[in-house]
Length: 161
Ligand code: OFO
Image 1: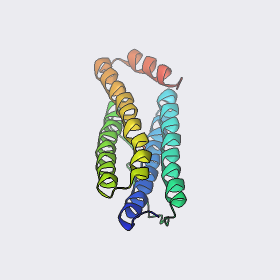
Image 2: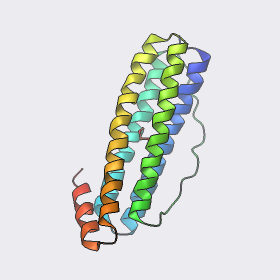
Image 3: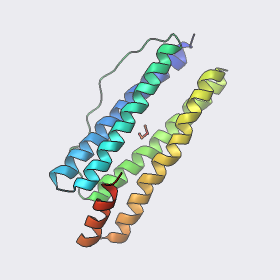
Image 4: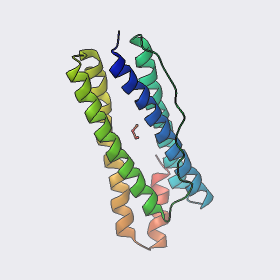
């Protein structure tokens, strides 16, 4: 049986991951509206991943005999000033999530819940990829600056995700 403390944290993580799904869905809609179909496709794929992260936590909490309690999902923005601003927001979001899972992992260690600790290692590792891919897009967009050609080339590339 999982502790009350960890149960509350798992419920919060489920909410965080649904929020991430919401955020990337909003970004996909923003890009599609602006006819950046490749960026939109990339964001939709990312949103699907976030839904997977949410349900992975949810299934685990149930498997451990915990109670799932779904909270409201906070509102997300509906537009960003530029593609760079959107990817910067995505990168900042992922950095925040990395910190959250780091603290959660430490809590599982403090609670001596070895099973939860091992389970959470997956998220700690996943965040390496989550940060790397958004950081890479930010870096390229900064290099592209105002080049429309460069922007559409990246749009095409990310559309292959
Ligand atoms: Fe769930 O990794 Fe991004 O937020």
